[in-house]
Image 1: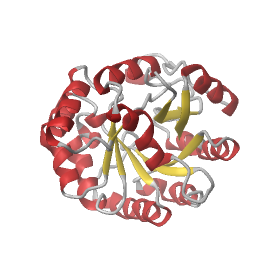
Image 2: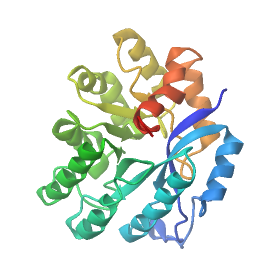
Image 3: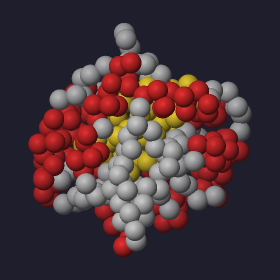
Image 4: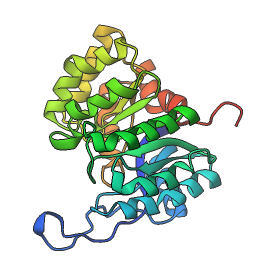
Length: 278
């Protein structure tokens, strides 16, 4: 495998937390606190370029926001790194999100990271002002909005799909984890993903965390339908994902031709690579 680009990995170390009523644990054992550690990982893996996102997962949005400047610093120090800024749809986080959006014009910033895991909902009217502000900033600065998906609750593809309908006509929207589970995968490959593309929606995705059959089925449908080949990216989701496993899974499905070139390199360059003139 040639050097690849990674469209989703995290920077920053989270404190232990008593998840699900158990003792405090820190499951993301590969988390990195420094830019040097991150670059060493990229070299070891054969990762040429990466979109680096503030680490999150414990139910304290302040921690995720605190890593924004570290990600911006990483992008400014090394052009192999592009940065995503953590933003929030919650009214309670409005001030922090405004501060984050002030960094949108910084060198190397290519995306805004949005997740409903720490609260909020696409269909909640209370979130609409923040969502409008986030997508307006993405539109102004030509940034991608990077959105977590997973089955059920506020991250379900039925719910997140409302963002596609409302905003993806003129803002590029990256649906992380391709629905995140069986229901999302079937809804997306079974038609919704391709319907959005055919309707002119600027929707992209990655297959991190995807269930085993999904990459093969998606590649088959891309070939059969003749669209979507330029909307899929490789992503490791390190340290929550497994780089080697994700790489092997997607490489087996994508093969070694034009589709693989786009999945592992080309589409990343379009979304997250250096902007023209820089």
